[in-house]
Image: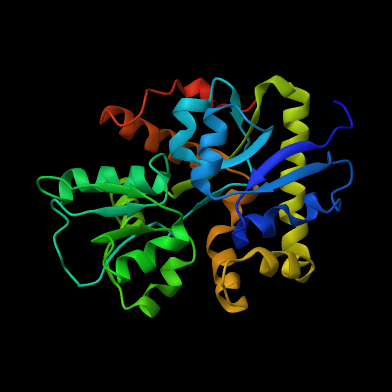
Length: 282
């Protein structure tokens, strides 16, 4: 491996900046240097599909299109329980049949979970689906630009401020039907880097997570500098929800969750089939 910094893209959300702070700031001994790009998930998903950058935080839902070129790292991502995307509207209990829904990415795990849920919960199906940056969705619902919104991240803590109502929790639906954690965001790296480098990257990501847990104050200014209009309290809630044992290591349960999501989606004709071996770490 050369001394050239690896090009990485992850979101400015607190969970990502918390996880990658130590690595990005040279606090992980022996870890390769990083050239960081901040981008929302819709952008990083597109980067992965075009084969841009060396390491990316992406949606699990985009993996069927990128696993030929990228390997799934076993750490650094976002899985969990009680942290699923929410469907919000201005009025409680409204039907989404034929309605316009804003989503954060048409290749996001949130949207994939939404499609799996809507297949049985929305007779006749929704109407138009509009992709917009996740932080624009709640204002768009509040202002009547769309009928409903599929939201992620800290929106689960803040949607009441916009006068919105929760119609459904995609995580509750997923967990009740599978009993598994929700696979949301994955860390991937180019297979062309080679197996030894991929293992080195996984070690660096894991060490960065552990450093963040051991000294959470070290990353606070980095987290808050990049958080989008977010209070320190909400940032802490965000980190507590999305950074957990699965971030340190997927483990067999995490891999089972990923395989189950992609298998369900493929069986429904929503994504191409993914061979089980494609999710294996070199």
